[in-house]
Amino acid sequence: MDVSPDDRYLVCGSSDRLAYIYAIGRSRQSPIVLPGHCGEVSVPRWSRHDPTRLITLSDDSQAFVWTMFPARRDTMAEPEELIGK
Image (cartoon, rainbow, N blue to C red; front, side, top):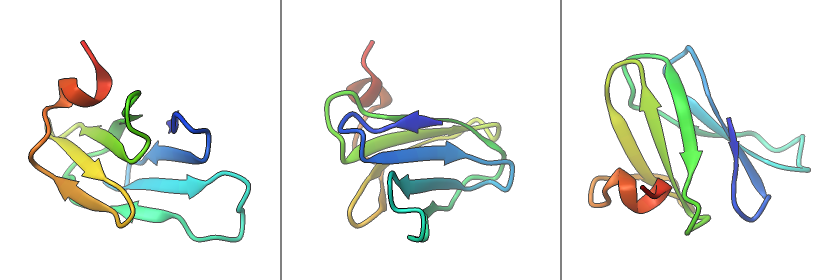
């Protein structure tokens, strides 16, 4: 799991092949669901440079880059752009 750089959101990976984004301090709000992996989502990480971008890594050996609000998978960015070197 990882907290967004602006401390507003928590992203969690799961063994159900999904990642979930929770708004911190809004316990009644349903999480945003990020589908698409074929294995356990083991490493979700927010971009340290852009609080609207994150990456999910899975046991299926895939890395998905996401742009948030609305949530969509983005295939244009390289993982290094998000998490640094």
